[in-house]
Length: 175
Image (tube, rainbow, N blue to C red; front, side, top):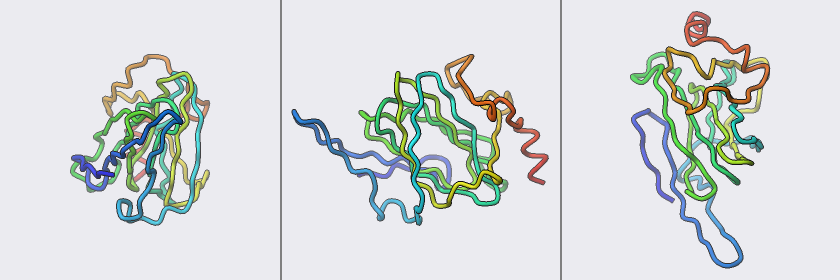
């Protein structure tokens, strides 16, 4: 496993080796020495092609997240919403797939979203806090102020995400 820093403090990519043979493959998913956070809760999501989930975060019970793709390929986006951060309002973008062996660690204070790129996309999340629906916030995936190019005009989104806050509304509510 190899840890790769990004320009975002605390956000990093982990490259793993995939060991393949005629039976299939094996890859390391997690090492405590790489993620020195207490990850206590895991989730698995299954998304079809063009499903966009996000941008989500929890405000009162924030979560560190460690993500990997078990099947398929996703465009993964993390938006820095830590008020005093040098990269506040900026986003990080990466393709995670079952084949490229990349994982992403997203620290507390980031909104997170994914776009399914293959027919079936299975994503594994390990989180440092439990899911708290009362603390969840959604920010519009296509907010003009965030300038995120998702590469899609009309993704499949949930009702909750269709009612998401604009980035400006989010900033006003955080004061």
